[in-house]
Length: 461
Image (cartoon, rainbow, N blue to C red; front, side, top):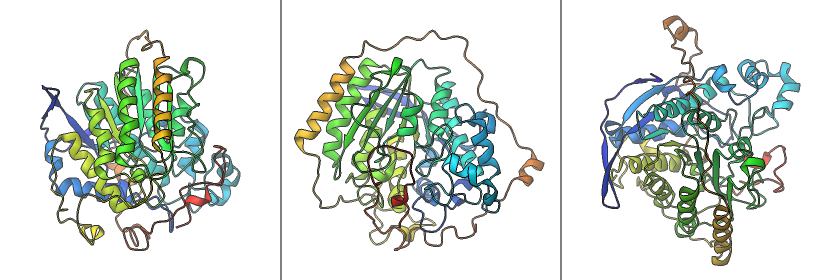
């Protein structure tokens, strides 16, 4: 068993094209994951995960899925992708001793002059969100569920030996590696406003993983994801990038997403899908520049789900935290085929949703800088790329390797773990307040060349 079950399961029926299928949904959550604090003025707020969880509770969605408390990932599990010296560094560095790690902080792109600060409980935070993604992948591999959800995961920028873009451990890559133990081909989809560079880079030279990212491109972090970046060696053609610009609407997004997804499913035929649902592509995001409604964003979840392929659903970016919570609660309901009322139910964070206390968002009155011609060019180029592939690659599958070792903590080990209480110093003091969610137009870097550099622009609140 990869995680501790806390709720009994209810399977849901879904009607697709006249046929009825049952999709079993599992949900992974660690109560402590929302208590970590990147620091004052930093836009990444783990508190948003707890806010989403409370909406899932008060809407009653938890009753309709199998809920698990996930295990914390071990160093060995994280070393399946990341270098051991990087994992060791993350496990040792703290705000109290970081002066003794100056060279390593520069080497690993962590610390005061980067967008990845050293904060209290950093290593434990990475263990929690990574363990939940691994548990979801193991559940899918065993056939115990059809959809696995981990809203704390989806940190797509982290590299093998380097933190980047608020991400330290790339739980997505680790989960895909776990899925590849059973499935010959895995599709990764990224609807975050930022390019999924860490995942693309990890699988750039293999045809067993196809990456599909729709993102803002040009003078915007991380600067990668050009349409001509299609993979290398055996992976040529298996990196699919849709570079977009500001103001993307629901209709425009769908014009790219659905036809490209149809062609991907036809030619690649994945055995499993990982869907990163970064909410910074929503309208009004603090760092993003797209103009999607909750329904437009969630349509990608709904459409992916309609293919009835085992799917791991993850979180990602999202910096107007009240809208992130709205989005992930709503997309949980989409996974469950449950309709939610627009009135947000009373919960511990009810005041965050003032003044309207409504679930859905109204897109801003702003121009979509993506023209019909530019969108058609992207669509045609991507379909042409996919049609040039010679069909789904075959893989000689040997005996399935064992699941990652799950270390069960006994009572003594639990007492030794560092406490992560809700009153963690500074946590939540301004989260969701008027100053915290002030929109800034700074979700970009100085250039669009994708180099390793300090991403100061995303830190100015």
